Length: 205
Image 1: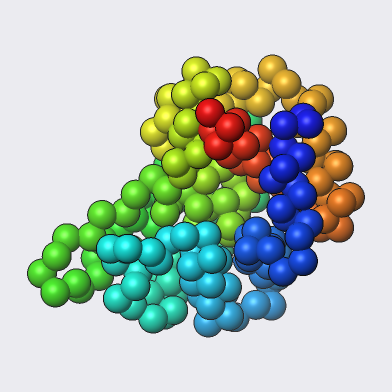
Image 2: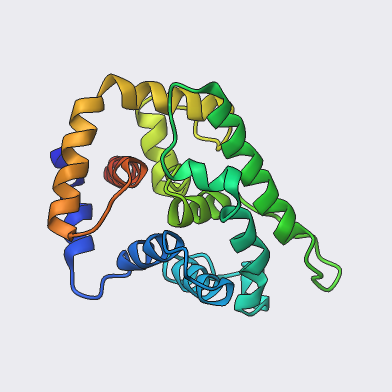
């Protein structure tokens, strides 16, 4: 897993924007955190990870727009995804249900007559930062997924293929996860390491 070294070094950089993921993930693992503080963490994470650039609809709203999403990811069904069991087919349906619920939250917002499109990138980044159960399906991940012959859309077919890939290299990913935890001195879910791997592969391509 030497391939993730550039991404890991970036995460080690003092005050790196990659730390926004860790702060957000840790906050959502704190049962005493308030809805408001979690919405702020999520909003800042999304901003520092490029989700408020250009024509993003999120630029038109304040942090309270994320409050319903906080409720979704803190629900009992969603919370179990913080440690997904890849051998349970039902976990995939739960992941997709959470993705759809997040999308519906934002799509129901009033926006001056314009329709809101919730991309795979936005929904998956939220789930990576709050639950750590999927990688972020952004531009570089998609390029990396194609390089590894994994369907690039955030759907059931892609998740199944991704889990098969992870299982085929389980010991490598676990070793890498432990290294990342040790160097960042933080609890790191497996999917964050997977995200780092595919991001780096995609960026190299």
